[in-house]
Length: 115
Length: 112
Figure 1 (cartoon, each protein chain N blue to C red):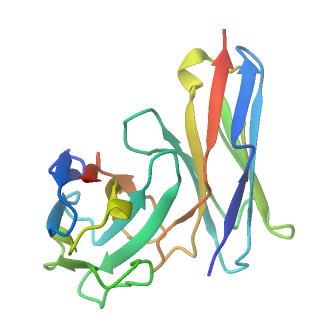
Figure 2: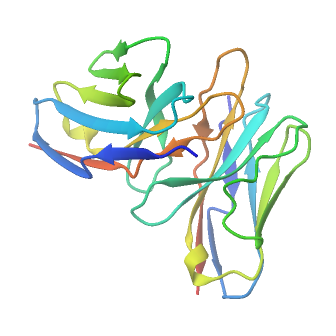
Figure 3: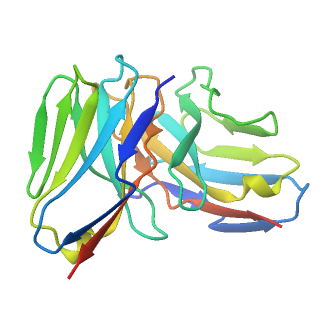
């Protein structure tokens, strides 16, 4: 079946502009995660959605970052007033969370460049 | 919160030799430990994982060991091949409601 998809694949924006990144999880996956990966670095957890529960926002680096998810479908990560340090690949992952299934499947990422 | 340390940051081995990557974690409540392989410009791919109720898991040339007492786990790749060259990330999670905490990655280079 279809995997996790993300759009756009690349985004170049000017410092101070707002951007929206989209994630379409695997159909039926109730859990959705956003991560950030700076060049040559590991993945940083940003936010987690599980069904209709309140999201875990503990990884968001500042109040310029926010995310929404409607039900168990698409999610949007918004970065307001972008800064150069926001340049990174933003990865989305989804998980079925059934029983003891914890596996997270990643999308291809959105490469964000702030000029 | 959880902190995951990964070593080495770069590992170069001869083709056919074994490679071992080690990780430690800090949160004794973590119970799920996946390993991801990321090729240049591509998404991370899960290659193997282990849960805290077992000490070792093997899948063909890849194995993972877990020592809960010492809070460390390792990835073992035997008979390495050129296509094993990539960056490998370990991670830890409490499962359930938590996201993954990743190590900083190991760049594995297989020398022909």
